[in-house]
Amino acid sequence: MEKKSIIQVGGNIESAVKGDFTIDNQAILKEAWQKTLHSRLAINLGLLFILVLGTIVSLIVSDYMGGFEVIINDPKATMILNVIVTLFIWPFLAGVEMMGVFHAVGMKTQPKLIFSFLKRGSWVAVCALLTSLLISIGLQLFLLPGIFLAVSLSLVIPLVVEKKLSPVKAIVLSVKALRFNWFKIFSVYLMLFSMLVISLLPLVFLAQSEFSVIGGVIFFFCLSYLAPLYYNAKGILYREIFGLQILGTDGENPPSSSNTNDTFSA
Image 1 (spheres, rainbow, N blue to C red):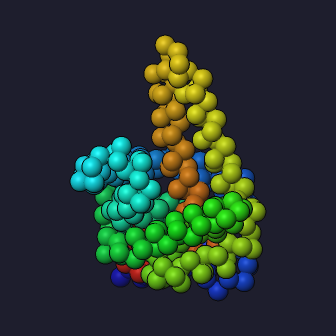
Image 2: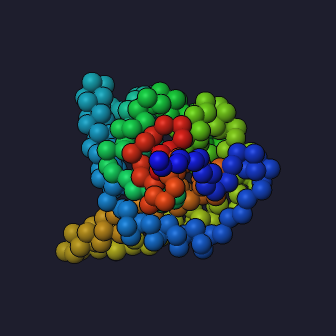
């Protein structure tokens, strides 16, 4: 009879709030790249679905509110549109976030995973709205507080989904933990952002030429790697800082993501 045991992978909440974890920027990006080479399809298909969903919701809401021109010229209408789109897409985007977490512990994922956490969708949507509000306020004040919060709150969604915390508890925990290695975590995101900027250069330089289509193709090709790289890097950060428990079977291969309960089945 097969024996099953709970395996703690990575860090844990107790050590995270004490700052008892290390961040190796180069190791994280190198590992994230290796995982991206073998797992980018699921993330890209999930993001494509979310992009289509967000576009449809935006078109319906904007049409109801009088069109995009009306919304663009009305800050209140723009805010309402952003809130509605956030409420619709983030319950699915949480699945993409969790793909990165699953990849970080060796699990294989499928695009349908974006539908696996809809039961936590209301908490995820509220958390996304709260973090967006806090970051926006920080950016409007002195810019630096916004950047600090953007980094410090970057892992709140997996905390809401995987640790099943409330949005407020996830926000508080994320800030408490990430502040210890904030600059190293920021540097990971900065390197990813730099890659995105570099991938945009062909599009910018060729935009006004007959080769504009080539620039677009190059950008979207790069984005098909950068987007999964971003989520895989976040998943590795989550593993190293907060960790997660998986239900393993003795002698079995690396776990799969077929089970999305409190303890993830191997």
